[in-house]
Length: 364
Image 1 (cartoon, rainbow, N blue to C red):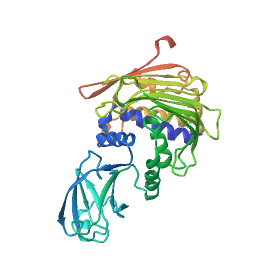
Image 2: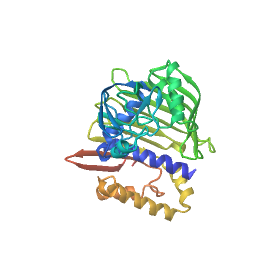
Image 3: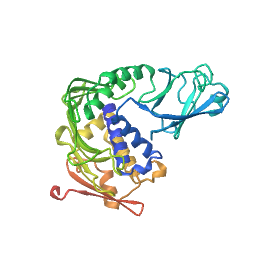
Image 4: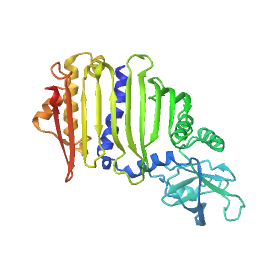
């Protein structure tokens, strides 16, 4: 159980870190576009124009779409008479020109490519088309293409169907209710590691668009638990903003767990994050199962406390905490603090992230 908690905990921490300060990721814009592209019609045809010769076996198409290129993992597949060219993401233009044989790369608003047999696409009579997709696995790409020909779902329902094709064995469900834009899955199974050994199950997963907004979605996961410990159930709910102009991706998140554990935060106001959490006994028990004794756990907690205040350049969260906040954080799993409720407020002003961590007023 400890290993699963570490994976989920670290993933949640990273998600919150990026949500609170997305500019810390050097390609945040590209990541956001990748996420948006997953919700678009996939796969769909990408417009190509202005075919021209560059050098050697290398030819160039102009791309009529604002999609991430190979600097951020391109989602475009180039086809020759309906069959994908074999060597995707070849970032060396010289190799495309000198060796060719179906190599290509998507760079900015252009695709640099060579034909499958190094003939000239200007004269060989073949048709070249491009598709936007979300996988570079040819087998999965084929399944995704076949599904798209008959798919009638939209919105969240379409996304759920797509995820099951993209991540076989990692994302499964027994039934889908609704054809979009909102949808509910029942009896959901997740594998959260490459070997599919760490498996979680949930009674349901739902997503629905927020009325009166463009691009905001509410989601909820009910009765989430490790398959080997089905009684240790958690629930998650939150709101994301997937609109192209969004400054904040994760607007809110709430988690309820065993023995009364709860965590919630609101980040709807740019530059401010308000969080509340408490009843950490279940979390401490999981960590103790991993660290074996309280002394080791206290050492780890101190390391986390230092990481939270460390500069971004050193891999930290760069939060400016006063001495009371640092002390509270370092002792958060002590017998005196573990059952209490706490409030954390983070404000970003003039490039500095000021944080206040206090015991909740009614819990004194």
